[in-house]
Amino acid sequence: MSIPFELPTEDRASSPYTGYTRAHWEAVADGLLWAAWRWGTPGCALLDLPGRPSRSGVRSDGLEGFARTFLAAAFRVAGAGGEDPHDWLGRYARGLASGTRTPGRDDAESWPLILDHDVQGQPMVESASVALGLRLTAPWLWKNLDSAVQDRVEEWLRGALRHVPAPNNWYLFPYTVAGFLESVGRGDAETGAARERALELMEGWYRGGGWYADGDGRAFDHYNGWALHLYPVLDAHLGGDTAALARYGGRLRAHLDGFGSMFGADGSPLHYGRSLTYRFAASSAVGLGALTGHTPLAPGASRRLVSGSLRYFMDRGALSDEGLLSLGWFGPHGATLQPYSGPASPYWASKAFVSLLAPADHALWTATEERAPVEEADRVLALAAPGLLVQSTREDGIVRLHNHGSDHVRPHEGESAAEDDPHYGRQAYSTRTGPTSGENVADNHLSVEVGGRSSVRRRIHPLGAGQGEGWGWAASWHRPVFTGGAPMVPGLRVESVTVARGPYELRVHRVVGAPPGARITHTGWATGPEEPLASALHGLHGWFPGTETVRAPQGTAFVPWAELPRLSGEAGGTTVHVCVAVLAGEPVNVSPADAVTAVEPGDDDGGSVEVVWADDAARTWISFDPVHVTHARGAAGGGD
Image (tube, rainbow, N blue to C red; front, side, top):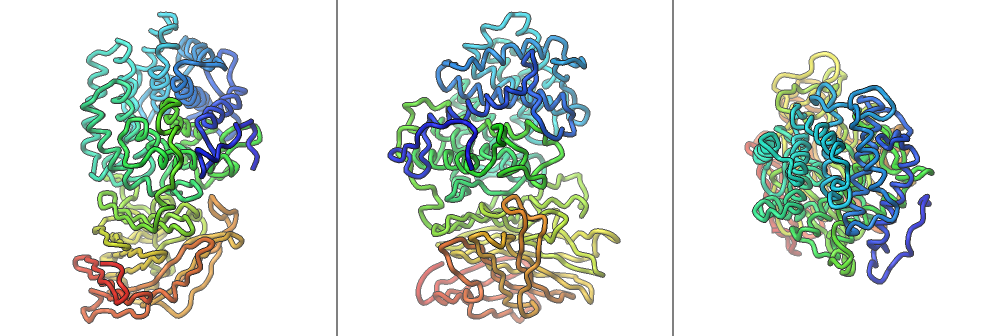
């Protein structure tokens, strides 16, 4: 698809994979800003972009347009050492003066006040972008503001310090506001308390291996990169705090050791978790790691990932004909969105432009692009802290994520089927597929059916994860939750294990405590009928013969209409169900029916199962009570 503004000529010598250079990044930033500013108010305080309003209302949406585009402009100008050929900072200076003159007033320019998250919280989110933009551009913007405007801006920002954030990454918004105020000599006990509280919570949310939970529950998603790592690492970098940079930068390095493998060969990030309309913001942690040196990735590999992600969306219709980022994934897509999303929400994608803070002579831009991790070799990576299993195949460039630990259900919340979230509850996600909508048949899902009612998976309890040479596993259990009637069946429990090996996914489920007459279904990947993808599911044990194909007429973020394979079987008491799933793209041609030669259930009443692989006679043993997975090499080698 065409991009509605001009880009530089591709450079395939220094960027053999993407053709993009630093000049392309600057051009995209400028193009996005030009398009967005067509919708600015006369006083430049609000950008009222067209589209459906968020639940926070149009005034908050207008502030969001100002703040999030300001972040892109700030990275753009700061990265150029203050050069501002389009006078972006002049517009934002006028907007700062207009928006803070009478905050809270219902007029054409005034910004909404920052209140508690459950009253009027969205302005607190935007305060962080305003504060970070001001910190980045302080030598050229802040220092030239009239002192009265500076005072008004400070007073408005301090609303973030005096009100209650949402119980998650939101605590980093007052943290960022306080960091700016301290950087310009306006710190005090109030700013110190905001920063201390955020860092205290971060310690409780850090689960190891470079992964933070987004709050007190088990939500592990893209917020790790574009919020939980970005704010403290960038704060330490800008402030020259070597101790903090060593601490938080070390965690970023550990995060990128796994996260760097979560981009497809086409540049796509994993379609998983909330706020996916932020799109190429997913690469911000990669750029930040390269900028600060806290990354395991070579500079050329980092640029391959960040430029690949940016180009992925530029080439696939993320921009409207007017050059605006649409609410969706490629083009507009309602199922991708959350209720808090408004017309300017996609502009948190601006966080990716943190890469521009690396100057033109930085290795991120001078090194020749190298292959992304997915392009180097087949990989299976077990991430024990979040309970995730990453599986990638070099030949087709697809990355798959098997979810056995992230559910976005907060500790105080009950488990309700009405709150089922397709972006967390499914067992697998990828860089080439999206989940089906909640109104259609769920993809990558095991459902227990009791009395004609189907179950969903809400709270996920991890049971472990591990890996060996060329293979890996992850496991979890959940209580099936039902819509209509009784929400749960007493004693009912599903234990699930995924073993990834090459392109194959061995999926083993033990259903415990199912009442007589219960049935189960299990689905595979949802793909479009004309896509160059193959989705297949083959039952090995505990399923009726044959696999049916079912339809998802509302499609996914990737296709307007989808279909998926489904197995069915009987349950009652304790039963074990084994199948092999495959998602493959051209030129890969594999059949799950050919993956396994034998399945041998144990004689321990559903307590174990043994699988013999066809290619090399390797054996995988899966036992329950407790869950344990072992793998032995076959005659042809492979595994351990």
